Amino acid sequence: MLEGKNVVLAVSGSIAAYKIANLASMLKKLNANITVLMTQNATNFIHPVTFETLTGNKCLIDTFDRNFQYNVEHVSLAKSADIVLVAPASANVIGKLAHGIADDMLTTTVMACSCKKIVAPAMNSYMYENPVVQDNIKLLRNYGIEVIEPDSGYLACGDTGVGKMPSEQVLLEHILREAAFEKDLTGRKVLVTAGPTREPIDPVRFLTNRSTGKMGYAIAKHCMQRGAEVTLITGKTEITKPFFVKVIEVETAADMFEAVKDCYEEQDIIIKAAAVADYRPAFVSEQKVKKKDYEMTIPLERTEDILQFLGNNRKQNQFLCGFSMETENLLENSKAKLRNKHIDMIVANNLKEDGAGFGVDTNIATLIMADKVIELPIMSKDEVAKQIIDTIQIMLNVNNLENVNIKR
Image (cartoon, rainbow, N blue to C red; front, side):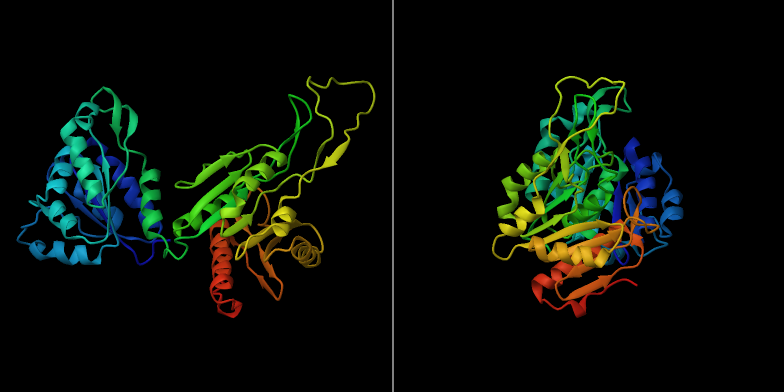
């Protein structure tokens, strides 16, 4: 995801510096080119060799080390950087950056960078809440520098309060939001539905399906990383909600229908990846249904058809994409759904194919449009999400599917 991207990690003196070693490893696995800057104080918490081993690049500390041209290195590094993360950011470094003080390799390089800059404070809660530090943080934000709010919890000094640096995953998500993809969805609003619905039988039992929400979550995350304003309406899942996405949690098909109705009109793109129940119990018992000595039947009734509603009530220039999970006659069934629902695209897959369907990290999808069918090979759900959005973007912008760069 970060191949060809130059990420600068600026580490100042804090016990939280150890977390950046793991972050550097995570970035390396995403093929980023990572340069680590350290203040002299930071070397008291973690050795520069750790970062050099993890990144494969020289760790830069002393601006005037005579063995290297660091006095000009900071300028060339600043020019090539795609994103800078200052983490952990001590009160001292925050104060310097806020007031234009550049007296070491870290501050001179960050000052010279014109790319996106993110700062993650980490310090004792009394220091963090000090009005001077808060004023300096406000200054950073006024200058366009993003500041990640610290977590609350047990601190290294033994106190409990705000000032704890967020996890490596949180820091990584901030980097990915900025640097992973071109922001070609900026200005667009995207609605994604995901996960299963639960239709209650009684206070204890419900009818549901095997959907985990992974495909819909991958789509929502991908759209966010490409600059869209994303709303995710999700059934109950066990996976982590995407960062920087508005999440609306629902339970039943009726709940999801109402949530979609409340916000669909303002959306530019709607991708309905949820596995919504087609039927629900006609009667819901207020008490637990007790076991009997005879067979029990549960009368069912149809749920609201959300995709049909969207197709019948679509707004001008609104793009609608549905999903079709089949076990037979995939193309025929999916093309009929495309026509009957009055939508632009169906993402179809066959549950019986190895690597496709529910509960796995891969998918084998077929993108079906009125005059075009694109069969994708097995790939990760993140990769499938990218191919879906690439195709939608081309249909919206030039309506020429021959230009879609499908990964083979």
